[in-house]
Image 1 (cartoon, rainbow, N blue to C red):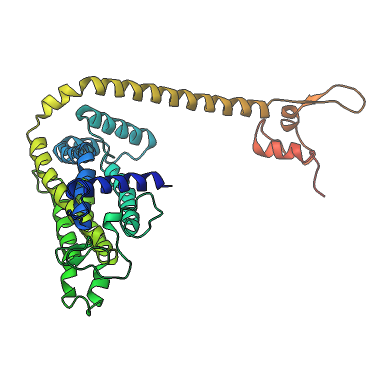
Image 2: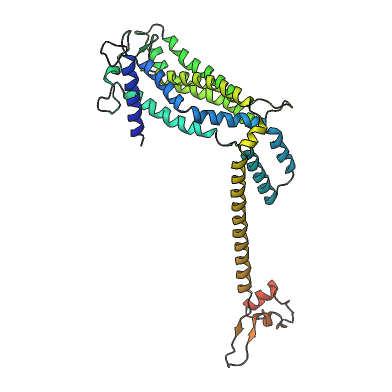
Length: 357
């Protein structure tokens, strides 16, 4: 499924290694750790527009909270469907007014997870599987053989081809194996700082808004998840995670400063035309829904009138006929009168108007 991504990552890593070694010189600088860090910078540089847009929307959400709370207060005690639809419509209009995408924060995550999986697959095989399209001979290593100074997998005293747990347990080759746990610890700390920067600030009343509540949970879940990955997988993944967190922290600081300087009035003016287009589309969609609802209602009425339509029954002698309504409105053999069109009259008609013994 991701073979084409494996191929792309392999070619990018090959190009980075080629540049670092001075044009692919055999005795040049070949290092897996540096290639991973450079690859991380390339990936997050390409993702700058997506991440910046997501963080901008998140930051602006905190600035429009007074208007959001006013809408929520307006429909606080109105639980009927019409009121809920109206509240949703006004909320969407508010987002369009400022050009905010409420689901923009999900996009970077949807992109990051497949990238992380593909990177893990490539790093696990780029130096061992010579048949793979992403095999890099200059970064080759033998699985199970520890990296030593001067080999491509040796980076800052660590073997990036193994996990911190493997490094720690191999005391024969790595007497200071505990140093490998610096990788997951740094990953947790930097991920925590990154989520704190991404978290919207508190409003003037000191209350944390809805977006802030969801980000508060991420402040704990994401760092723990990154620590679990970095302690379980090879240390190359940890380097990727650490470099990516540092990149996002620096980017987040600049984006927050830029967004805080934006005038909301200027933002409204900038998105005025787009907001009008979106409002027109919402109106057309609501009109179609109302037409569909009316059509369904009219169908129910027509079926009901068809089912209640009087039918004639012909007597065995070919004489005059009478309708169901006539039967239900007549006096029965039990001496009871049934109201025309009532449930009891209809039930009596269906039973043939027979008197129980």
